[in-house]
Length: 154
Image (cartoon, rainbow, N blue to C red):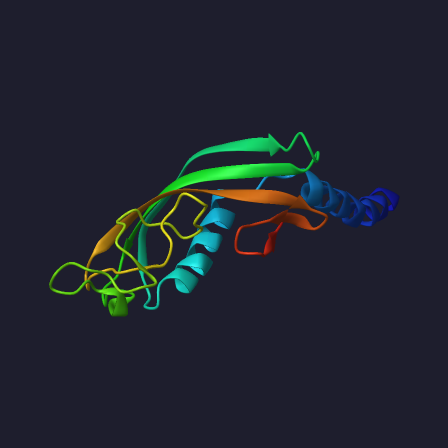
């Protein structure tokens, strides 16, 4: 009976330690990246897209030497179908000219960096768009902060 009592008393401590360890030692996951992708997709495109495929292709730990800040990158490919299109107000005119604030680029991203397209991107109704991106996470006391501003932990 004492053995059972000790086992039951130790179980919450072991679970708590694993959770605390994981908060500071576990890496972001493909599921975290997919959640961020879905969050940013809603911000970047004004109509819903259906994620047909999402696949992590690579990941790596980072350390910023100047600041000592720890990071983590997840690289992925995704395919999204837009049944109703997206950013239809950015459709080019008959001469192929795009309105101000719209990008003619067919390189689609959800978390643009300095070299990525600026402005909204037109997607024709029914078109399937391919994304080839990477997300950088930064270590946070509660887990990992993603490019959508949210903190993710196990």
